[in-house]
Amino acid sequence: MSNPWGVVAEFDSAAAIYAAAEKTTGHGYTRVDAHTPFPVHGLDHALKQGPSHLGWIVICCGALGIALAQLMMWWMNASDYPIWVSGKEPYAWPSTVPVTFECMVLLSAFGAVFGMFGLNKLPRLHHPIFAHSTIGRVTDDRFFLSIEATDPKFDRRATVTFLESIGGKHVEVLED
Amino acid sequence: MTATMTAPPIEQVAPHVVTKVRDGDLKGAQMGLLGAGIAMLALSCAFGMFADGDTKKRFFFSYLVGYMGVLGICLAALFFTMLQHITRAGWSVVVRRIAENVAAVLPFMLLLFLPIVVGAEHLFHHWWHPNPADTVLAGKKAWLDSTFFFVRVGIYFAIWLVLAWFFRKQSLLQDQTGDPTINLRLARLAAPGLLLFALSITFAAFDWIMSLDPHWFSTIFGLTYFAGAFMSFLAFTVLFARFLGSKGYLKDAITTEHYHDLGKLLFAFMVFWTYTNFSQYMLIWYANLPEETAFFEHRHHGGWGAIGTLLIFGHFFFPFAFLMSRHVKRHPVGLAFGAIFMLVMHWVDMQFLIVPNFHPTAAAAHAEVPHAEGQSFVGNFTHGLGEWMHGLTIHDFLCFFGMLSFVAGMALLNMRKTNLLPTRDPRLAESLHFVNI
Image 1: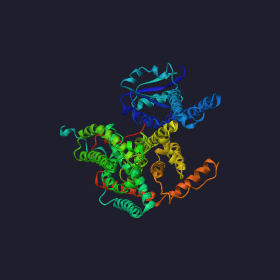
Image 2 (image 1 turned 60 degrees about the horizontal axis):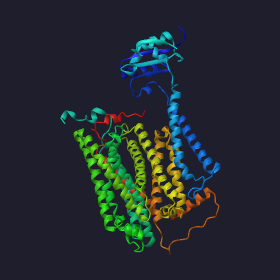
Image 3 (image 1 turned 180 degrees about the vertical axis):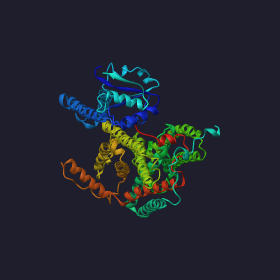
Image 4 (image 1 turned 180 degrees about the horizontal axis):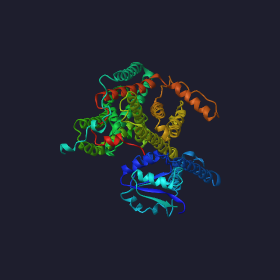
């Protein structure tokens, strides 16, 4: 028996996993996650998950997009090779707005997508939870709750007993 | 549809929600709003309409600022109602009765159009009595014709009144019968309704604002007017719902989640206003054609340049930074402040569109205050702002805020008569339990 990754339990319905999530976080577990075939409203709340930090990544990327676009247009049009077009100054701010806007949107979108990947530690080829015997049904009709070994309250035996006591089936300890 | 297919009454869905204002409750607020509104408008009309010369002329511009500013709110209420039906929105059911009742004030807006009828010759004098040598206006004669102008007023209001009346009536009927087919019928009708709405509000903006300067034209103008109008309707609704909530009504129905959504739309349409206005500006700036740039040329004098700057910062940069945060939109005071701020900015926006078209007669025109060359940006701005404030009249405040107060009072009167929310809409439960992800 090497290091355990965590304990995973199976539940039958969205209502069951919602109740289980509330009980688990209520019991003091913090490294808890739920795996469901479809979004269950309010489950993040029951899991006591804080707000996502993705917004900060997106706003930083957006600001970077604005800065880069402005720098690019100023350098190309007014510094490196100034061109006077239809009587406008080489750097004329109204003409830079559309490109600046587009670059902001592009980098914000990149920030949102790749930031989400990063925060979720994706892409990855394997995850310890795949070792669970019935996890295949997570995309079909079963709901899973996991408590990770990094949780300060985690105890191999006590956590298994706890998940069984709140109605979990196929409670399995998974190796890292 | 069989009788078994009716939507459940609200007593089953949400027994804790109060569906009607108690008899006599909120009467004081309603009378206060109506009284203040009517008093301000009457005072303004009495002193403005019966003055003479430039004072009278200037009054009609102030009146048009107030009228167009507040008419936009009522029209956007109709738009909001139809939008929720055509998208079959679930979240907004608890807010929709407010929109229906604000749109029901539109018949009074027809009544309030009368001073514009009286002042039309002053407001639209450029094309009302066109200079025969003016070949541009000769080309626009078919549209800019005083008889046809009034015919169009009739057409626009016919569209708006019929739509507002029908959508509200059907919704009230559903409170009685719980018939879910009403939603289907209204969703179908909302499609042609929105089409008619889009065309009528566009041409109304062309007729009542853009034609003040009949040489100038912008095809996006109707859209910019609509964007500002819908934004101010959302601000109005936030404040109106907050007021009802503070009196204990709709408190459990319109929750933080709904305010959050209204805040998101408020933010979105504030940005949309900027988007359309910038689109208009950039094309005019780029092409640099005298017939188009005249619009901004007029707005570089008399302090209007500072107002343009104020709009860029006050109607975009500041609210963009302020309303972006989720916490602000979900904070009662934060969102209320944002809403009040945007309503004031809407008033400034209407001023910027309408008042620069007022040209005092040569004798009365006082010379522009000269200002030192090479002043700083802030120096120029404060100078312009001072110049603008110097040109403001009491009617600019009385007309806009009087009209706003009147519409709020009428909307409250309607809310006291009807249920506070569509009690038997099939999506009511969805709306009550709505949460943002």
